[in-house]
Image 1 (cartoon, rainbow, N blue to C red):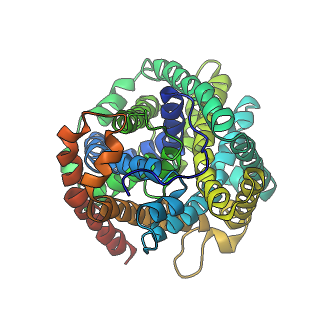
Image 2: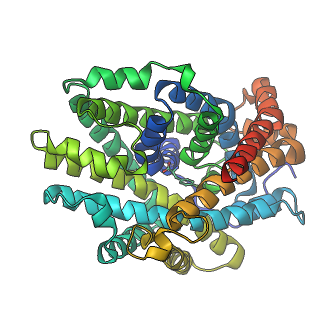
Length: 448
Ligand code: PFF
């Protein structure tokens, strides 16, 4: 059990930096640049930021290391990796749930990513149509959604080194550079200091149970944890790679980009006297108005939405890769065929989400629950399933595989791991399960 099961030669990342950029690319996405600022805005700013950072350190980073270790040891997709570590057991159900969750998230995430793509051209054309009207047109939403899925397919088609790794190496540094340029503009706007104060000066009077739940959920979503994306990416790591250093680097990069996104958005928001609690429409409705007041605003706006599209693409790649790796490993389908099968399923499942911004009243306000279809999908897959998945992964790692066995895997490439293994053990055995059960209870209370 301690050495990896002998398997067919598996493609590997060509370098540590290639892996870190690809995994950071998965983590960094709409979750950081669109979702993080609006959730921070709704939850009082600075205090949320601190709670979020605590969740990343206490829950996110340990689950990240656990996923990478399970993946490198199993050398397969999530289903195959659980099976390789505990053959014949029911634990691979966590893997199946992950494959399903990946397709579920991809189906609505690519819809939002499609709008982002559309906004590049909308900004350039200086088209002032409000987001609500833009998104309500199915002849805009559906083609953009399909185009985004095809872009994702084309990258995943190339496999690990020539597809995912090569594109991440180009796209991720570009993203950081664009973000820094935009921040330089945002923080020098008149009135920016009030935005900085809102974002960086915590007011703990605003913290409630909901704030903590929001921070925990945002941490898993943003770090791409709970559905085996990092198990899959870990399966392409070599034994020379340092799982601990790589995992922590990915978590740091993700957190840095979310932090920078806040630094971009809040100063600009307050400079324009707008409301930080605007919610999911923040990026699409509020930012174009801010760009409109800037010199060369249409180019700044187009650059921003290009940045957001790049970030979303490196995330949809990983969402597609999980189910693709499952079909390639477990059902011996060719990579090309698997990629198309998964993308087609995501396209079909995503159609109601693409029609949920007013174009079809039924999907825009579901009977009984009153939500739109996309929000329902986000709640089920982006919230509940990731949280359940992270719970399953931490329990499996610490209680079933057991940290002392996993340590033999992690130690390869990280000889000093034994000295701090107890910390990871404590986190995954106790802190993560308890923390996650608390979120789940709150999620269900919220539902009521
Ligand atoms: N982490 C991505 C984001 O923040 O946008 C979303 C995501 C990607 C979640 C991959 C889960 C996942 F497996």
